[in-house]
Image 1: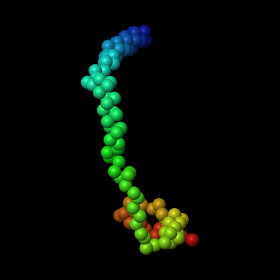
Image 2 (image 1 turned 90 degrees about the vertical axis):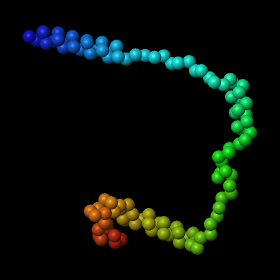
Image 3 (image 1 turned 180 degrees about the vertical axis):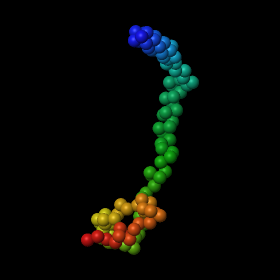
Image 4 (image 1 turned 180 degrees about the horizontal axis):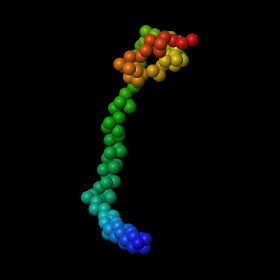
Length: 109
């Protein structure tokens, strides 16, 4: 009984392997068929290099400075205070009804 089951399992596995081998076909890489010649491509590349970066108008523009009513020290102090706040990483979506509980709103010592 054991031998017949073993033979049946081997036969089924051989059929499965044969099916996989038969199913996997290999198609070689197709040769490249270029529409333009090397000289045409080289001349187009040279023309594009002479034109420069047509999409780089933002890069070529000078930086815009905007005056601010706040001084540098106050902005830095506010950034440091926010970075050191114990509840800076709280997300209200993590709490029930998307509301931060009052014990998390107050600053801890």
